[in-house]
Amino acid sequence: MTQAEALSAAAARLAARGIDEPRREARLLLAVALCCPLEQLVLSSPCAIAPASAAMFAALVERRARHEPYSRIVGRREFWSREFLLSADTLDPRPDSETLITAALARIADRDAAIDVLDLGTGTGALLLALLTELPNAQGLGIDRVPGAVETARRNAAALGLGLRARFAAAHWADGLSAQVDVILVNPPYIATAQMAELAPEVRRYDPRAALDGGPDGLAAYRELAPELGRLMRPTGFAVCEIGAGQGAAVVGLMTRSGLETVEAVRDLAGRDRCLVVRPGERRRRKALNKPLIKQKIVGMSGNTD
Image (cartoon, rainbow, N blue to C red; front, side):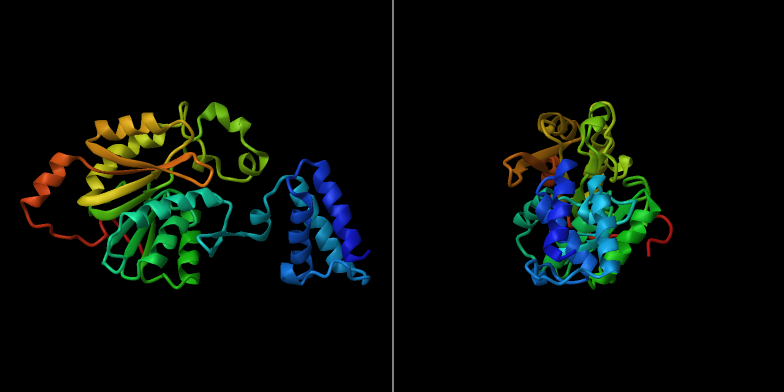
């Protein structure tokens, strides 16, 4: 079987299973099976595929036909033009979540400043590490309740050369943290439990449920986090929180009741409100102007965070 024949058969198989862009998906998998860059595939070649490569390609196609995402098959995902390792314990970072990085950078006047960043629910570490690549003198701490996710984030930090500026720890949200920071990134679970069954199989079957299920109304994590954000932000700091579709008003209300001010809702490329930027309320900011600010290091976590 030639490459062209294998590709056509695979595309037909994927199309029959409802996979979007089946020919593109088949090409990606063929490049993996042949261990060559996608752009080097010569689909018009009359040469037959070696038996071992053909068997591998068939196995990969069957995995994709079961709606396992390409990123899960290869174990990595590109985010903010960097490559991140995935694991069964981590959410697969979506391109729409890059909106949080854009929103954070828009509010940082001096990217060379010594900025402290906290990432709650870090998963692969994608949000924290992407932001640190744009802030050369910043340091950060990523928190996740799943030890396997913490280990994956550490591996990603090392691969990106950020191991000295990014630390990770296992904890439930901000439990044990006391230091205040300049920037907080949050991508909590926000899917209502009843809507979990409606998710695409690529998400429902392969992403960790705990990273998706936000309780009966999807707001359980925000109720826990709103009071914590105010406690952990410096008076001049801000937080960027990803939200689900139609949740903006409800999350703004939770933030307001916790003494936080919502600065703006930032839309993703599809035009949907993707995240909220919040900061301490005006009273706290005014009070801070009347006393010197003593910066604490972003350690605060009881026990070893290395």
